[in-house]
Length: 437
View 1: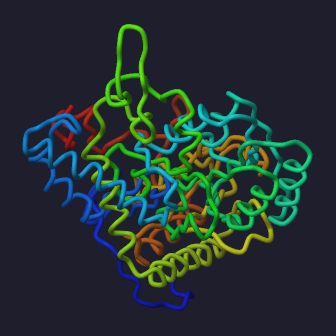
View 2: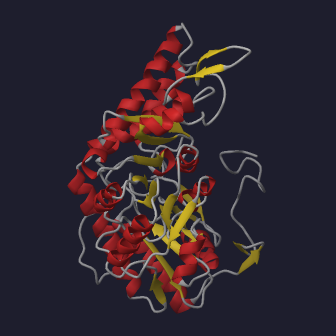
View 3: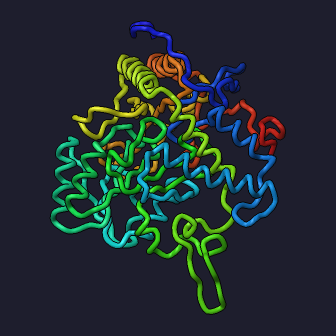
């Protein structure tokens, strides 16, 4: 792709897998081009370094007198401070560690004392949990402005305890004006929750300045794929609710006749916590906070624009968009290719070009239905993405459209695969892959 104004665009950070080589179905191998950051981002070097440093000291937390237990406990509790600083959390907001965003939102759903209002564009993690105390769905309009007016009308028509909103669409990357929505919610006596799974890895978030009451995101989408997530929010609902899990660590005292539960965050962190995952999440927050905000934004916008510009030149490529007046988006591009099933395109990109993208409905079935497609492709950009990666993806899609695939593909149970498959996999070739099944 030579028509686009060129510029040097090296990775902004070192991530695991940056030098990964993968086999091709036609023979040989190539460097892996990862465009699936929106699903799970690779670990930052700072994250793996911190986990490696802590691993020899891994031990039980909060109740161990041994030196390793003291170190693990200190690291676990210090991680709350890293997350709070990363988000500029208010003094009354507590940091509760969870498994992921889905876990965090289900935890909060059990604490909300009333109805929750959501849009129909949400990821399932921010759409399904709220039925417990009443979920009211507002259909998004074709513009951000009209969508906001619909939210206003819903909140004014009937009181709601919570407005649960996406920070950035996991399908299109489009952003909503969170500070404005928080102000609107508060004027209506409603609190606001932001699903920041896609927003936190891409944009700085200031909970105090934006007036956000609750926020959740996942480590595995924020360059810390070690099984931890977080819910940050106002204490009162969390302290008043029943513990998310009943067990050790969530209590002050237990007798045969009753229990005295601890306040949040311990109230909702029963059992042995994921110390290494929490340390990884804190390391990612520290590393992301240390990057130059302007440089990160320019890097992402340049690569996203380069990708869109290149794909626009390919006949039959159509982009997905929720709002025609949306002014900003994170580095996510969703598209279809006329005449080709998305799953087949994704299999072709992987097998013949060593490129990883996501295909399907992205755990956002109502949104895909609104956009009038059964499935699509999604290319997502991260700190390790380069201009060369972008050009490889554009060239591969162009080759597919103009020449067709160079290999046969077959669909089995909704999954497209090369036919025949010549690449080694752990499940079929013992010892050929790292897991060695």
